[in-house]
Image (tube, rainbow, N blue to C red; front, top):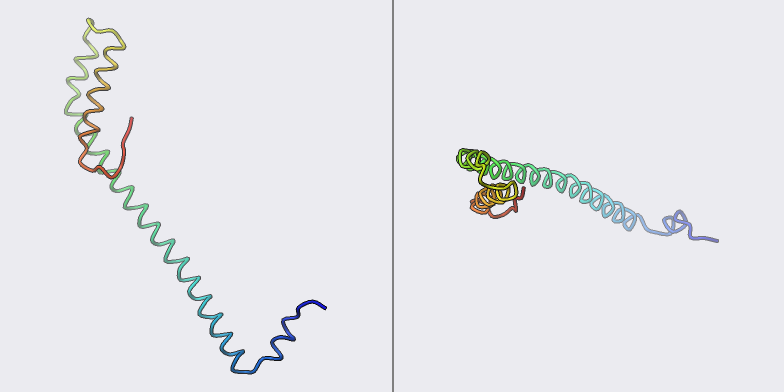
Length: 109
């Protein structure tokens, strides 16, 4: 003798059954609406994040290209050891990255 839904529904009045159907319909509509709207929201956020990241990367790329002659001079300097060259180039790149206008994201190399 388990719980039988048909027996419970037979004992309910027509008004109660109609109200129950309306409530379930509204609940189903809200769940579907939230799922579609939520998916759309996160897609828009992903596009915005990618766009902001592209702008940041483009800005860093332009700054690195403006410093490319300095980096090339460091690479050709025979007086510096390999580690010193790496540290100086890293310092140049870090200063460029740290000067990034958009501080919402952390950019590393």
